[in-house]
Image (cartoon, rainbow, N blue to C red; front, side, top):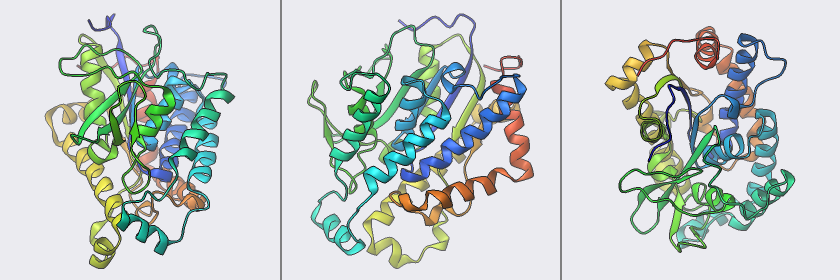
Length: 344
């Protein structure tokens, strides 16, 4: 059975995938919560797990979801770890020619062992056994899921920190590090992961659910059927301007094509949701907010960790726009415990 809603006004967070560009999502979230700190009169920037009822993420967005919701980390802690993970996993990479040859042969560009090792080191540093399961206490306030893709069927799958009773959905038993590996196992970048318990094989969730906003709403409906929605925040990792890319760039480099496809899927999902009846209602009532850096991030590849400073600068420029300042204030107000407006 579902968890009782108890008249809750839900606060939800959806995080797109995007490799190292996931840093932009964290920087945007930090600005939202810095604004919220002022609205709620807090001495420090609050932890997102204190506000969100559900966080869903894909790829690096899934890793961030685990850190924020399952490990209950602060945003600054997540930023520090994210930068370390980016350098550790994508550092000392082979040259472009070697990667292209490797891609043609089907050999992953990066070692999955690095990602697994750095996630386990994170868990140990937080005082968590590295073989701890993703499933959390049923009483945990902030629930988390990450998206992956079943390799055999190419169907999207959710790994949850809670039990689902939805028909046709499976409760996979997986460790935290396995969930992190599965959601980030992008084809060409990392080899697929085979879960120890079920034996099922998974790849990156970005291939089917790079923008998990619909999954976030569906999960919230199933978990809290009688609740209302107070705040729904969706954060992207940059638009892709396909018109600005040469045809030979798309056809000659499988990695770039993969990145383009993933980003387009996220953009299309965001636009489709905003145009749907539910999305329009949420927008009209200032319940739904989509933040996504519109220019510049499309020139940065998923693995370019040396461009983290550029990601920072582009994100700051985006947030400095007057219209984004208004969105940040409205978004913080929707999250605030002092505000009361909500819709079903």
